[in-house]
Amino acid sequence: MSLHKLRLAAVPITFSSRLFFLKPFPNTLTLGLFSRHLQPHKPLLVRAFSASAAVEDIPATQASDSSARPQWKAAIDFKWIRDNKEAVEINIKNRNSNANLEAVLELYENMVNLQKEVEQLREERNNVAKKMKGKLEPSQRETLVEEGKNLKESLVTLEEDLVKLKDELQHVAQSIPNMTHPDVPVGGEDSSAIRKEVGSPREFSFPIKDHLQLGKDLDLIDFDSAAEVSGSKFFYLKNEAVLLEMALLNWTLSQVMKQGFTPLTTPEIVRSAIVEKCGFQPRGDNTQVYSIDGTDQCLIGTAEIPVGGIHMDSILLESVLPLKYIAFSHCFRTEAGAAGAATKGLYRVHQFNKAEMFVICRPEDSESFHQELIQIEEDLFTSLGLHFKTLDMATADLGAPAYRKFDVEAWMPGLGRFGEITKVGDWESVTAHLNHLRRVLRKAKRIFQLRSSSTL
Image (cartoon, rainbow, N blue to C red; front, side, top):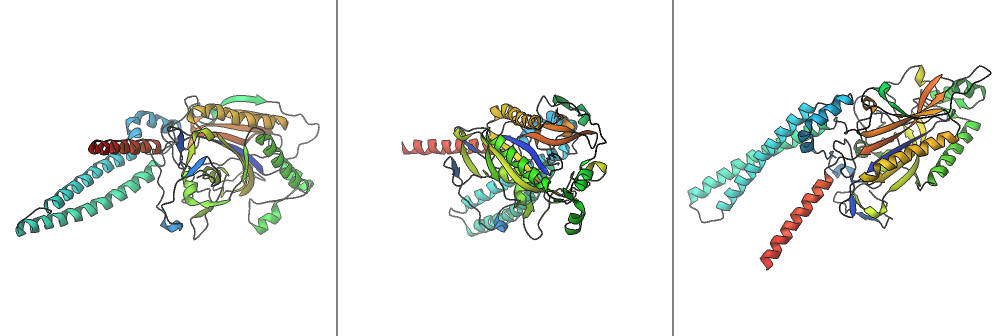
């Protein structure tokens, strides 16, 4: 999964946007972080600022020690996937995903069947326990004791098998991509549609230098010293380049804040579970994430990860929406597999700075906020006098969690081509938390009705 970069001049500040939308129930929103999102218009679960009067914190049930916390699992609606198999299958194909839908459905059916066996054994054990409460002959009691012992042993074995099966199902299912916006072009990158194009390439009366040569001639960038200190794909900014980066950052923040966004700086070390809930691979082969040995923590590759965790495990009042943030952070990426002329210099580096717009809103408002985000970015780049085009990215170029994504590519004279400088993604949450909440409320209502009847 790619992260999101913006290169302005020879400066390593980057810019991107994320949109999350939530489904209300009835006047509150329960948010919990997300991973792979497979069905439209479900709620998002996320943690709030403790100082916010509009947020009700959910009491912690786990010890503060991270080792005591249960392993996180994506709340995937497997029944929805099974009932919409054809649509999910087409979506997997359109997005050029290697997800194995048949394996997911087979594992799910096995899990359902095993769950039924477990429930049946539990019922049989409960029936045996009820029989033992009455007056029994010693031989009858001995028979029931032996039967209960056998049922208990069988139940333990089946429950262990069920846990393993659920873990396997989660692992396989998390590769299934989110469903896609109906207007997204189908195909590879070449099928992406141009939403807007601004300006035209400048004509120069002198030979053009790329940013590497400019940085060397003007003493703005030092790659050699950084390579000695930190390794390849690191750099020092120097002199006016430092001031330019800070000016661009301050200007960006001030412009976006005028649109009602709250400025943030974020933690740059987060728990691995938060990274995974945001749809990134914190461990494993070809990961783009730096993990900290001996801990459950990672360096962030984008500010959307810590911003996405702000409201984790909290209940938001619908009246506080939308929540709009503009976050600055340093970002770190392994850039596994990055090589070639297109990655030289300040492209595909291991550390860079980025401004990230992030919106949490209701599902019915997501389309308008997605358009607002891309319009803000287009206005910023127009103000900077850049020649750029905005692309509605095709299905095969979307990351697994993305519902829709706009990329902005600017003309880069030193390269003689367009290059990506930012992207705006719309991520639908597809957790089962809202359905679960409804089931809990329905059950509570039934219990209340039964108790009321018995009282009468």
